[in-house]
Image 1 (cartoon, one colour):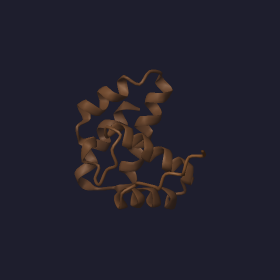
Image 2: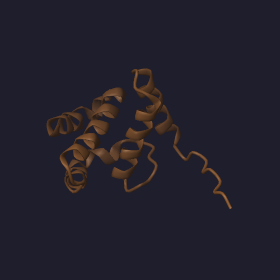
Image 3: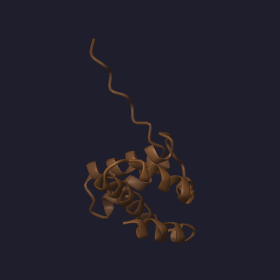
Length: 102
């Protein structure tokens, strides 16, 4: 019996980020990939804010445990890209931290 497609579970917040990424000329597939990576960094949970990224020590430990350098860089790029598009003052220092990891 074929599997039924799962309905999208993205929160309104996640959809808003995806739309902002696409508006900044990122391909839809890339925007989805970035959100998937952020979701993985958020213990595989949908999110309604990016506050989990402020726990830089925890997120860095997750990224450091990912394996090869390219995988780590792609996760960091996802984080930085999303923080860049939201351009929110409370996340400026957090964004600087992650940019330094690139």
